Image 1: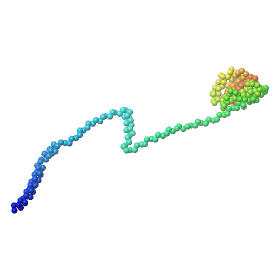
Image 2 (image 1 turned 135 degrees about the vertical axis):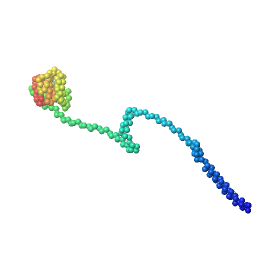
Image 3 (image 1 turned 135 degrees about the horizontal axis):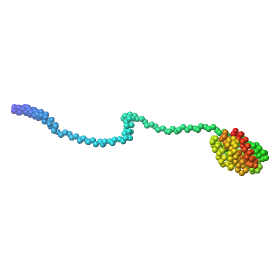
Length: 249
């Protein structure tokens, strides 16, 4: 009987002991004042924060006047927004060569008068009164071109100087007058005489006589010459007047 009671009491005592322990634990938490808990929280050290870094930004120097003007111009033009398409740079083009202007065509010059028509073989034979036969040859030492020509009638026999004619054409009336003046200054013993067609000079050298004259209407200077054996100054002057008339001088 005693064993049975002890067996029944032990579980009840164990249960009561566990219940009392649980009540003590609950009371220990509830009996702590809230202010003590808050004070405990306040007294706990705050987490340390890194010290703030001092601002050491260096001030930028003021822009120069030229740089400021460039910045103002850039600001006035406007800066393209980020991501906006930018205009492609202009493609350089090759320089255009200036147009070549062809010179205006010049009218062809009229042919120079043929000296064989200005002074004929018959003119020279009449000058010599038919006493000598002449033949036509080139005058040595006188080059010919579009503006210069010459002709010589020499006797078929002997070495005497016959009769000759030289023609010089200038491009302008002023150039023709200059050539006449140069001949007047260079021919031996030259002197001006009454005009044949324009200004005229007479000159002589050893056995040769000269008459030179200007033809203003053609910008030409003509020089006629004759050997003293076949003509005199009067005969040569008359022949020069005939030639001048043929050239419409």
